[in-house]
Amino acid sequence: MIVSVTLNPTVELVYDLETLTINGVTRTHNVKKFPSGKGLNVSRVATLMGSKNIATGFLGHNLKQTVEASMNDDGMTHAFFQIEGETRNSVAILHDGQQTEILEDGPTISKKEADDFITHYDELISNATVVALPGSLPQGLTPEYYIALMQRAQENQAKVIIDASGATLKEVLNSPINPYAIKPNLDEIQELSGKTIDTSDYQAIIQLLDDPIFEGIELIVISMGGDGAFVKFGSHYYKASVPEIDVENAVGSGDSTVAGIAIALDQNEDIETLIKRAMTLGTLNALEERTGYVSKSNYSHYFEQMKVEEIKQA
Image (tube, rainbow, N blue to C red; front, top):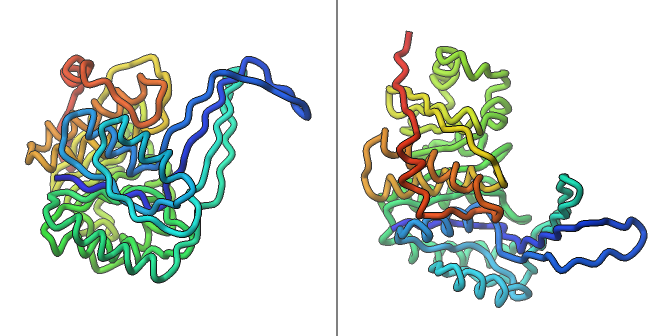
């Protein structure tokens, strides 16, 4: 079973506008409202693919009914921990081919809430094979909290996937506890290494991934958008290529890729299948208007188009 954790979820409001009046009134009937957050996207995609999983994290009482009703509509299994603070909203305004986003700050998590969630989390991961820890931290928590969640999952023999960025990812990589897998995108790996990557120079990427900061991490998947991904698995390296598609909405493709990794690890699939599954789900998300959503009926068609080449170290 997969457990996905969203510590700082949001309710996403999407307004698709034909016209936008500044300093005036704009009306629209094209409104979408759904819970979002990297872990929620992972869980939704895993659910759509028929994989047993449970979504958890912190959830404020203000939007509890909205979020849970939407998850129920998507057939998701969930067990969020209720907090006193308010779950944040995010607003996306689509107009004239552009997207403007307004993001609220998340709630501040109290020490008692953080401690009580650990007890809740321990119960959920007791039978987990994979734990996905993607996304940002709410106020009141530090990267050490991420590390504590990771350690507790590993003590339960679960494989942990980290999909974080910035200071959180650096703290995780500098801790004595290693995740099983990380999935940085190209920008994140460049920020982490302080180097600009030429995606066509495979030997340079291999050299970068041999840095001591990545020691002990079994699986590293660098997502590269339309260029596919570069993968390190143990002492082996792979380049994944994806077909050209007409992108509808690429937001959430990284989360869908994490879902693919989690499903493959849960099912003990070989590395080539894991890479193809992850790339397929990332691609399927990009074909959909909704974030963190895939069509299972298209899975086989695109899976067969994924190419995986092993790259030998020079």
